[in-house]
Image (cartoon, rainbow, N blue to C red; front, side, top):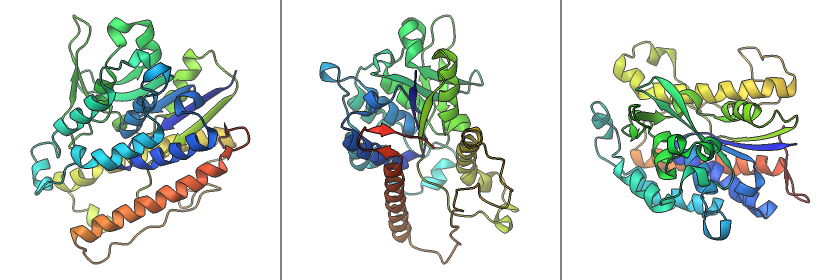
Length: 327
């Protein structure tokens, strides 16, 4: 029996990119994501998308379409990530953003929906800093053992998106006598949850021979970090970059782990891209631009990458049958 897996990376507000791809997919196939895939896995913003797209609505249909999730980023982005003066200074002693805006949006959008009620199997990642171990929110287990493993979807979304330095950790109750969970963003170990979903499905899904994996990212880091800059960094210098480095490195590692057995390819040399890949263009650090110009360039880059991702998604789809094909 073939199993179709959708995996969505973390990436903050850049989650609008996979949301746009999934909007295109729903339009082309004429079905919601919850009907197109047997498993939807997500980390951080990808976890919010996974939960939103499988949240039950009226008459057993999804409460939200992929287009609704695109609109969420456009309409609620400022609520979740409000513009703040002296944000970098604040991060030296506290989280960058208050969690109140995020929690308000999640409560309003997901309401009282439970993980066990997801319309298709869902896997969402988080990390428990109290127990020092990963935590996987799985709808399959929530259905089998609701007293211990079922949580409100809004609480799961809050836990998977609690990025260190950006939001305070989430605290979820555990079944007595166990202590409560203290949870941060699953991106610290699985920013790309594709391998987690693959292993999980291979373990609990009966070992299907045929798997279709669609793994959606949220763009790539294109700015190079030079040796001349990094060699003088201390705690503050590394603190500004280490989270992006960890998230990006984890995602690229999973891409490699999945692509190598699928393509039968050997590792590429360290100084070159894998076969079939284009080396990402590196933007050199130019003259200092104003904050407004930086923001404009960032948004233009995101829109350009979104268009490129949409074109790539079209090549992976078979319109006559609405079938998703993975390389």
